[in-house]
Length: 187
Ligand SMILES: [Zn+2]
Image: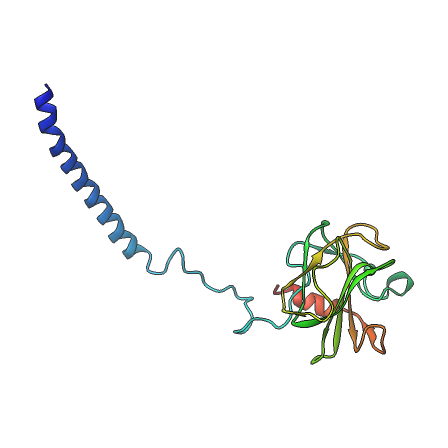
């Protein structure tokens, strides 16, 4: 018995490993033949913008809904974008941080400025103070803060403003909705 097993085993192992090798080879061959760039290669979606990507992106890169628009009620200076508290908000474009702090009505807020396009971008009611510091450069898509309800806010939302010129320093608030809708369509 023992002799028979000890004799048979190496042979069985050899046969088994040969069979496995053949199978593996067959799979590799068929796999290579079936999917030359198939499964893993992805075709860019039709909405992908020009090479280099868009210069601006939507301030919340996840699910959101719109609330009060520009001019709503008592001269609303921006657009309210609702998302759960803690949802990330990001820089809409490359810019510099002009203000980052807390104010009674605005709550935790951040103002970004792009000198080239002469626009200020304002984020209010952030959940916690933004890690961004005044004077700091930010790049498009960089984290600004979490959606919150600090300051005068009902429900977790981002109050977002765009100003032509300097925020409360000679500039004037624009309706951000056209830009928001454009950014929302691809980002
Ligand atoms: Zn608002």
